[in-house]
Amino acid sequence: VAEQAAAAAIDSGAPLSAAPAVAAVRERFPDSRRADALAALFLESTKRFDDAEEVCEAAIEEVPAEAGLLSARRAALAWGRGREAEGLRLIAEHLDTYQSDGEAWAQAGDWHLAAGAAGADAASRAAFCYEEALLHAPTSAAAHARAGDAFFTAADATGSSFSSSSSSKASSLEAARKHYGAAIALSGGGGCARALWGLVACEAASPSSSSSSSKGGGKDKQQANGGEGAENAAPLAAAALLKKYREEAPDKVKLVEAALEGLGVKAAK
Image (tube, rainbow, N blue to C red; front, side, top):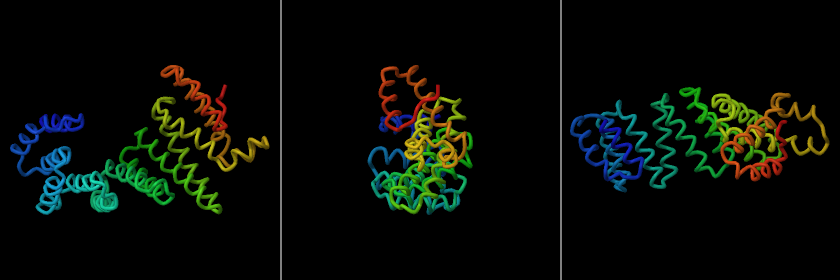
C-alpha cells in the first residue's frame, strides 16, 4: 500500500509527499529491487538525477539477474534527461534480456517515434516495437491504435521520401488499417476516436484516393485499398466520428465536418 501511495503521489505531481512512504518501503524491504526502483523514481521526480542513476547502477551491479525494473528505470532516466540516443540504447539492452516486458516494448515504440522526427526508419522501428507489445496485450485497444499510428507514419514518410516505394506505402497503410480496425472493434465500435480518425486518414492517404475520386473509378480503388471492406471502412468511421462528436462535443461537429470534407471522405448514410 505504501508503494502504491508513493507512486500515486509522484504521478499526481506531489513527489515530496511521497518521501515517508518511499522511506518506509526501503526500510521494510532493504534488499528489494522494487524498492530500489521506487526510490529511483522518487529521486528522479525531485530532480536528483545523479542520485537516481546511482541507485539504478548499484542495484544492477549487485544483482544483475533481478535488475529488470532497474534497467528499465535507468533507460527512462536517460530519456528524461534529454539523452535520447542513450535512452534508446538502454531500452534496447533491457529488451534483449527481458523480451516479455510489454510495457517496455510500448515505451520503446513511443521513443522511436519521438526521436525519429517521423522518419520512415524510426516509424518502422516503432511499429515493430508496438507489435511486440501487442503479443503481451493483444486485446488492448490503445496498443492497437498506437501501432496503427506507427504504420501510418511509416507509410506517410515512405511515400513522401521515395517515389518508387508505393508498394511499401500501400503495405504500411494496410497494416495501419488492420490495427485501427482492431482498436475500433475492441473499444465497442465507436469508443476510440483516435482509431476512427486513423481509418479516415488512411483513406485520404491511399495512393489511389485522389485519382479515383477525380475519375470516379470504384474497382481500382477497391483493389488498392484491400477490397470492398476497406473501401467502406472510412465512410463508416466518418459516420461514427460524427455521431460521437454530436453526443459528446456538439460544439465541435462543424470542425469535424470541415476536416472530413478537407480529407475527401464522406460519411456513410
